[in-house]
Amino acid sequence: TLSEVVNGVLGSGRPQTEVGLIAQGTGGDFRRSLGIGRSVSECLAAIASGRRRHVDVGVLTCRPADGTMATRYFLNIVSAGMGGLVDQYIAATPAWVGGRTGYYVAAIRATWRCPEARLRCRLELGEQHEDVALRARVVAVCNGRFFGSGMQMAPMAEVDDGVFEVISVTQPTRLHMMARSRSIYDGSHLRIAGVRHFRCNRIAVDLEDEALRLQFPLDVDGEALGWLPMTVEVLPAALVVRA
Image (cartoon, rainbow, N blue to C red; front, side, top):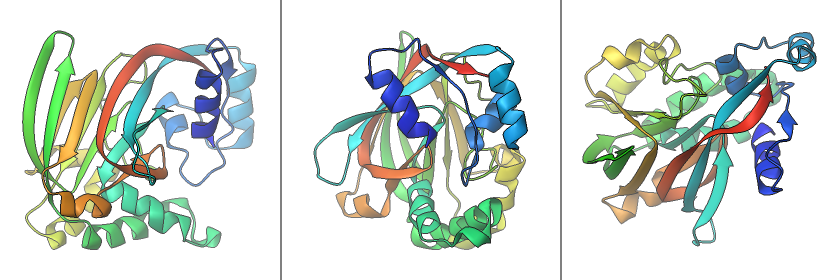
């Protein structure tokens, strides 16, 4: 996966290595933020073009399955809550279901299972910092715009501006969440009460209620890789991508 390649490149101590995308996986969301088409020929054309973008990389520290704290790089989005549950359901979804359909069905299932959680967040942007208490079913730290095979979680996000867009979402009931879920595809969810938007280059997030931890997993570039607490910070222009 792209996530594994990025971690291999940055972990090798050779960040000057250039990365190209041939996005034929389930989601293909990072290529959308880069403006690359979905076909193999369009991906190859982007690689052959010689165009280079110096994109930001996120550094995530979280708690994996063994309970210790671990660090991982990511390019697109880290989310806590529904996104991690969606990853679990997608992993068990037959390939014939298809990317967008599979993600939408998984999102509906996650809506019914994921609780509304009380979260403690500390956001930093340069020399400024803010402590925020949230109630949310999902909180997403976004470098790219899209996740979940085309859900436009952060339509304002840019992959090379040195800043994360943080989006938290909750609704009074699961039925409200379900009724408004389609709005994420065009980015209009940002106008709905219960959706909040912050900007930062570093964030720390944890749960108030330890009992909810396993029901609030992390999604890291489309993979379920751990649980809260997490800290996330940006490495500006840390990776060269052919795009």
